[in-house]
Length: 204
Image (tube, rainbow, N blue to C red):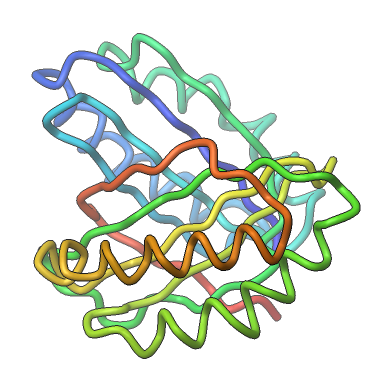
């Protein structure tokens, strides 16, 4: 599976307009593209941040959709977005969220690694970290993405609600320390978001 993410920041007062555009027209445009597999959108309403991910069967489908939709995507996040970053990833490990209800939350961790450690990171996340996460109350799904150069990664985990996310912080912090040490990676950022919607596929 292949993934394209966007990350936008701007005036919190203008965030709802971007959310509406991506949730309606943006979602429809993506679903009409060959190779489309899923789409998720999360927000930080207090600080004015938006992150979205679209999932694709092939890298070629992801590229074709970007070439076709890039201009309209930028229009949909205007006037909210003062900054907009787009990245491409491979979905190395994924456990899709199931039956997420209103009120779900999302924790995102950005990682930096030596490309030689990419395999170890994927194995550690899938065989060690993910089973421990799945055992935590309120866990609803998660994934590990790696960029093409294999020197950056993103771990995203869905939680049933904000209380579950908050209750998991201590255990996840300990697990994060164990996992990053074992996999020889560095945590570069940690963020938490409200889930607007999420349809994230299981890699085939």
